[in-house]
Image (cartoon, rainbow, N blue to C red; front, side):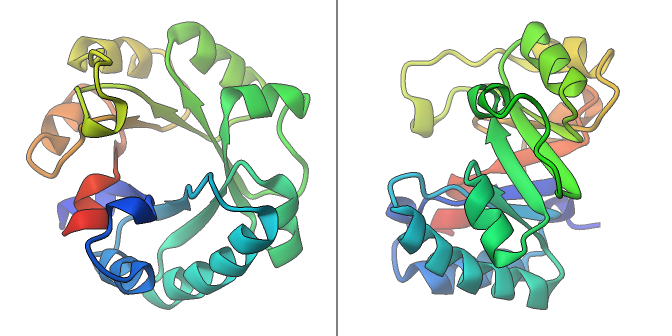
Length: 187
């Protein structure tokens, strides 16, 4: 089994050495289990336009596509998967209706418990290792992954410095897989 099948690709077009759509096609061809279109700096209209195209690429490759934080955009394009930062989940008063899968970013045991109680199907747990994306933020390490995974009733995917060469360690600590940004956006 390819290590990519246990990974979620998270986008950041500013990391791409070339054209973003070509990079997405390349990433999707590796068949990660999902792709989260993060691109937080776009307007809703720009994001929606991009999401429609990226969703089609993912569909062709059999990769689950997640809209990041923009519930109304997801509904407008018929996307049934949403990834939410915990503050967004809180602002919505819990799990938004009409979604097949809701993943939530968590950074502590309390975050995880709150997200699960609010209806999260998947936890994205960070930051595990030091990463360029969050310079200066010390990684929480594998013991943190194990602590959360030992009690979390839904799949946990680790984020922050996850690479194909440390994915096995994260999974051995109990995670269902890992999220990778740079590896999918730069290679």
